[in-house]
Image (cartoon, rainbow, N blue to C red; front, side, top):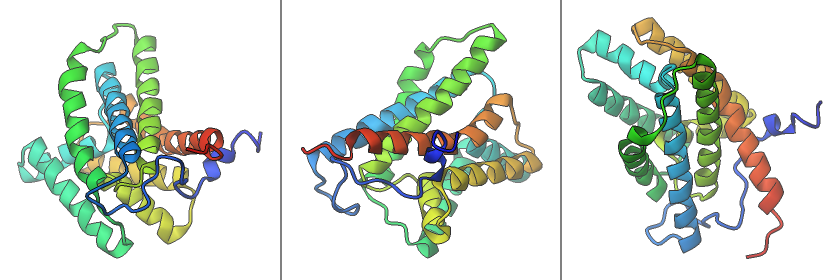
Length: 224
């Protein structure tokens, strides 16, 4: 059993064949940029699957909902302010933004805009739950691919990697802790929590960690 759970102990982002030598660059290696976009597209697909399942939104959206009830802001503006606040936290955590930080917002927004309307919406609860779980797994896999590209994480993923570097805790625990705290804060402010929200909060950390572990296992010795 201990061997099967080794992925939960992952404490860093592996350097694989598509990792950029530098995160802060305007001319990234072609393969790094391509895998960045692919990873972000998969990440966006996972979030779209979670939304389509109809079992609750992601923890950060719950937090944004909570802010709207307190401030009267729109959900979009609350999300924007939250992202800015998270980026400010990058400063003491010494995180470096890059092309991936900007691409994160653009690519995921495009995927949600054009893919979400075409995803199935099941009526059976069992299928909806299965879709929500699959969405979390897909999100974690896409996140691992784009993080390995080393072109700059999105605001929330940068918070995760920054806290991990500061504490040296496993990535799975760091991410799960952040998401759970965000859910609690959002719910206390008046945000709506669903089963999908709980699944995401608990499962996204292990999903990212398992994906990093698996990708490192299959590609660490690849010579390209």
